[in-house]
Figure 1 (cartoon, rainbow over the protein chains, first blue to last red):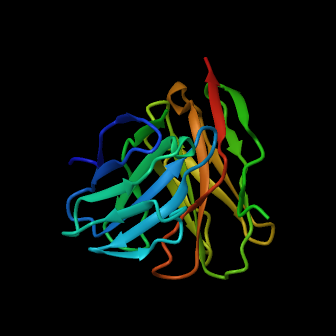
Figure 2 (cartoon, each protein chain N blue to C red):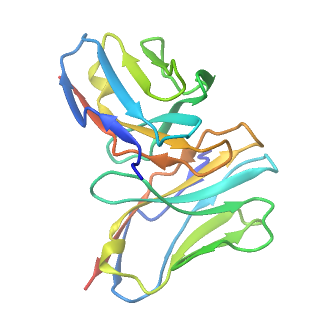
Length: 113
Length: 116
């Protein structure tokens, strides 16, 4: 079956702009996760959803970052007033239920000029 | 202190040999889970193996096994009979706490290169 998909695969933007990154989880997976991976580092947790609600958003670095999952499936990560330090690969993952392994998508590479 | 420590930034191994990738962890929570993921150059994280803190036996999945030494807080990944396709970044990760604590904390990874 189809895995986790993320769009766009690459996004180049200018400092100060607004961006949206989209994640389509595996069908039927109730949990969805966002991570950020900077060059040479492991992924860093941002937020996870169980259904439509954000169960843990402790990893969001500041209030410029926001994520939604209005219908319990697709999720959008929104970044306002982007900064050069936001440049990274943003990874999305999903799992069929809590406590299971997380299945990752290919990521969106965000570059802020 | 780092939650997950991977001390080998890079390793070169001859094809068909076994390889051990090191991982140590730090937690005071009695309930936790340890994961290994593979990240090829394509970028996608591929789940390999899982070990729960209360599991009595070391986890195995095909050519992958996890050498879990709880008292030493280590969870090394062993790959038997390495193949060229095993060349990738390998990340160790931990989930602390019981049900509902889903955040994974990753190490900095080890780049494994298999030499033909």
